[in-house]
Length: 251
Length: 216
Image 1: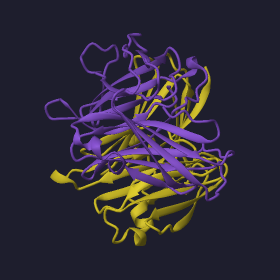
Image 2 (image 1 turned 180 degrees about the vertical axis):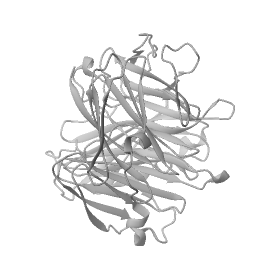
Image 3 (image 1 turned 45 degrees about the horizontal axis):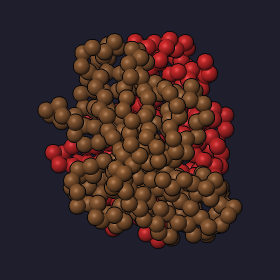
């Protein structure tokens, strides 16, 4: 993990889903606390799928106040030989100037297939939450066309056990620890007929809703959780990812 | 229980619709929704409660009432004042597709916010700029970057109002002849009261389908 030195770098965690033909991009806007100085920065991108599958590249050229991006294939061509997989990504912007402050910078992840694309903001590697009990609940929605799941990314150095419970039953959702360097998607099923919350009939069909409550300790550095929705295929199977919401406040 | 304010952009039209979903981990107490039209005029206000077993759902049509059309859609800002135990998402939907977004965050006064865009004939990119202040006008510089060009426009947003930018229209000259080109739109505002999000509509794709994508 690229642990950012305070005030000299900034890191975000994200993920991408890889399947043949898919393209992935990392976009970033480096900001030096409002000082639009033409400082050149280093960008480090780390890609991982397990402890053994871990690779990183560093390149220069990013400039303060200039939006920029990179296609992951250009940095990690060998990774594209493999089949479908979830990859974790950590992006670090860093500057050589000692007084540079990059924490207002931002990072966006994108994956696209053909003309379809999904974009979402990265989660800072270091959680800004200080109080584990003050984290908000997360509304999870499932309908006829969108099926929810949770993607857990562990870009850190210690196992990560994100603990969520359903607020209505207090039943746990995630139990297993995610190993360092691993990324895991956990499908959430809200429509198996035993939920305490009755579905709502809306113009676009029957909608199931429940709340997830984060419990336990704050995540270690480099870890992040995303709420993902996949298209429901005709046969009820989970299709491609169509929506990603980073759970920044819940982490 | 602490009360917080969340801001959402909602819209309704024949090709794009939205629904607010409010859920609470416990009996919520009062949740206040204040709806403003694109010019910041209050057009609806209501107070609801949500319980653990009874989430509250509003479609935009209900909340927007008689708000008139702006750029082909009816839209506005919803300010929701709620206890922090209440969780809210918005679902944007077209006939064939949908996506979720969380509340709009304030544009950082240092550096602004950036959205990746692509010059693509099947893509319509809609940026919404939402003024969180109910008393002060906000302004923003919106700059598009494709290759070495970076034209800029200035916009002002009335108190409580929303400004919609169709990127491909606003920067027509920049996008012409750049099929497949990648670029960015950066929104800069020092007001501290402005939020922004983007909604992409792609289509028609194969099967004459349209797809939606959101980034807020």
